[in-house]
Length: 354
Image 1 (tube, rainbow, N blue to C red):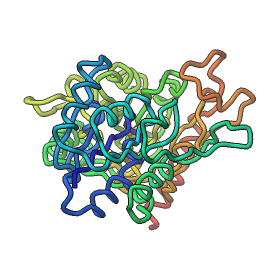
Image 2: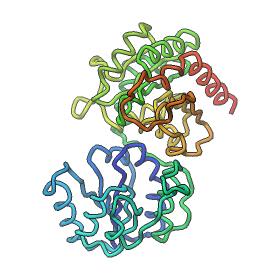
Image 3: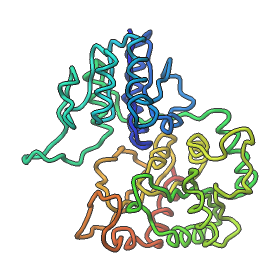
Image 4: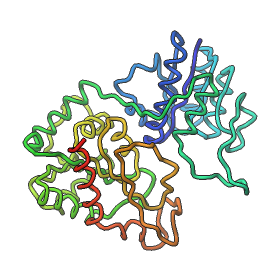
């Protein structure tokens, strides 16, 4: 049996799909499982052995993306395709790829391209109801024949990821700190999710001064300037930017990667983060996490992780789900560093008593 798993296009969503993906792999033992994935998401699954092959969905053009992927699927002869993305393009690719059974949600006019079209959760007026994506993904696995996958998020790191993190810890002197706290200020969704850089800097300084913690500001390549700005504003020797050019990393590979971020979160005592993909790395590695929510509904990304705290200010204009704030960013600006520091201390205290 050949199974194609169309993985989500967002990093956080990909992490939340891991219970369902794991269930597919476990249930269909002996099957050939092929991942269909965007290259920038592939690193989420680094170190796992769930896939026998990978098809990359590259670019947005017909030739580079849909046609090429569909041709590869036809050559494989796919018996079952499970579509985690809700896009029309993913359903079209599975249909053109002659996947015999195509399981996905009935959204964006693609129902005719699916053999098993599940209805999303809607209210009495037909509007989508904020509900956990993790549960929605699990329902896809159940429709595909799996038992209930459960809600345990799972990720892995590679030896290279860990070696890179070792270099970071050594170069920043984090191994000598009584505790290490990672801050994740980025958000691919849009600027509306950002917590002000000076707030992050204030929090980092308080964590270093009041707790004696080592603080590492995480980043991908695009957030490098932001991480450096936060570390510079904190102006404390125990606060370090992962994006600092002086940070020692593996010379024969990309200096910043999802794998390195996973390895850093895995060994941290706490993660403080925006509502972005790396937030979910904490649940996967059982690390306490405080998430700063602004324009988004918490319900969409609920993971039921018991060591998580969600912080959000109730404002009259939110949650708005906008990528860019048209007003004054009040939902994030009203969430003050002192409140986040208190939440962080609470999580650390619970962690030490566990």
